[in-house]
Length: 145
Image (cartoon, rainbow, N blue to C red; front, side, top):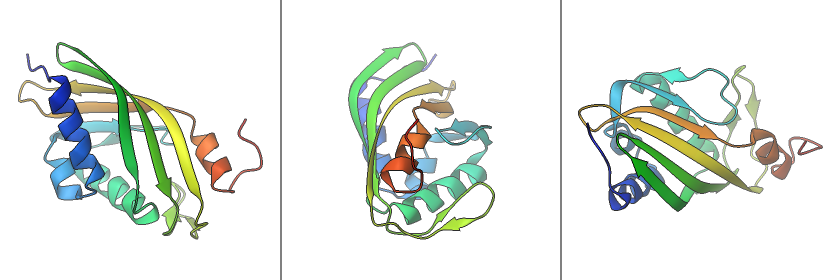
């Protein structure tokens, strides 16, 4: 069983905050699943994760995650975190529609659950949060409810 330490988890987040998609993907298994708020069905595999991250980093070039608490138990890790960014690039929705930059900031509280495989790569990432709140903060929704 592979178990991360809190400093290793924080280093992984530093890599994510670098917005270097290739470096981020080095942390994932080839057949990893990835699901964040706003994605109803998990993405499968590095190609799908690459596409999502590239689009997110384009829409929010200053996107960062701040880990507040890290809990490790065996090959599972839970991170209580804050995600923030400024919408300065085109945001492509799941239906393919493009939302032009609003130049507004968002801050979202999340909890992220990671499961590692036997090689120490992320096999599953699932983040829990409220995507409606982000759309409200960006001025794309009239109500955060």
